[in-house]
Length: 304
Image (cartoon, rainbow, N blue to C red; front, side, top):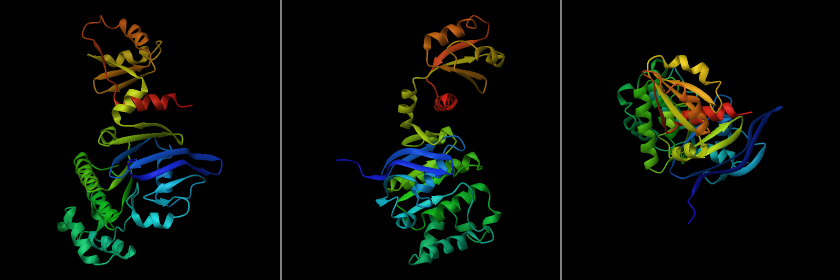
């Protein structure tokens, strides 16, 4: 039996004048999963999300989002999706409670006071409910925004870089909330620049220059890349970076703390490039599985 899909779109395309922002993207997200949507700034992530939630009409393509046609049933999609934008988009001169009550009225929810009280308790916002939203830290703003986005019990949650600008503890708390919602059956598509967040997702998709170029579990995406990575450790390894970048087989060199990651697709060529340094005192060279960041840097650098 085929798994039910919360998002099932094919050939999704959007142009702005002469610019092709999203180029025939296919996405199929099963219900109840958490998917990461990755790509550099300007890659088409936000435009794709806005088409999925009914805010932008695709120029081409077809499919459904939570069972509604993305071309003809945008209003139904809007009412049944939660969308958290990159920037805080609520009213800073209203309190947390007032913001949630306003959202409840917009969605014409019944028993609004009970719903708002339940959400305040669910997200640990009771003791701050009368605080103005404009006085909140980034993490608390994020928590309030999440509450507003799920107040109407959406079937799908679309999050556009929701943890940008918040501290590590707030990011960790946020992801615990997201996975808690997923366990209750909510489907989540979240765009992010953080590799540790991508690794928390059931599957990931990577978009570059409007094209979807990689998808699958983190393990699948790394394996499909065919990338080989060597780590170089030791005092002063940074001095090796410039010379390594010009050697055959070396596709990129990146700093990771006190180590260099040296990557390419030809293992033998990489080994030959590194052989000259293997005998240096205090230098340790070893092959290691490429990280997700290694793979994405490589994909971005290979783009036309």
